[in-house]
Length: 204
Picture 1 (cartoon, helix red, strand yellow):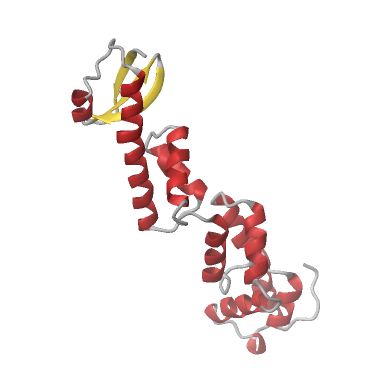
Picture 2 (tube, rainbow, N blue to C red):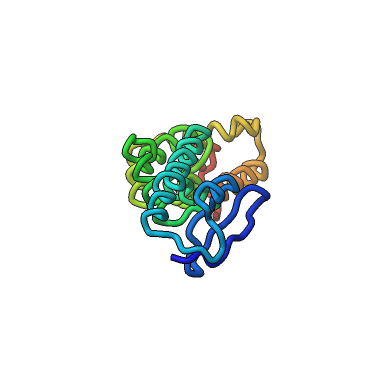
């Protein structure tokens, strides 16, 4: 394949195009080491060597570093690696590598995420947040089933009410309505809100 273009990313990093298609990113020293120059033909064996010994190795290390920094979903990890200009086939292989050690498990991620926040957020908020992070819906629903019991939502409401220093016994109807509307917007169920803030009827 022919090196048709070498494009600068930074002063030390360069995008290499083979037959007009983006192939990989190499550092300046690697361009010199493998004698990568525009117009030069590269053998398939050399391309394979660069992909496996340089690019894939770097992608695996990058994935491990990202996971050491914080817990991430598979989609979040994919997005970060794409930002690093890795191709999809390299990303797939790097993810297979970290997943083989159990470092990326979206269902377990969802369970940990819910358990850490379920006393302060509604199911609706948590569900939406996990969807945004790219967790498959079936994993979210399974995690919800394993994390929630009937009273958990009401406990989350109580904690938020306490944080707001709201006292149902000392509040006026107008104050209760304001709190009710706030909690409703947070995604809590109307019947659970009514029980906690001690109201019997309102048109929601």
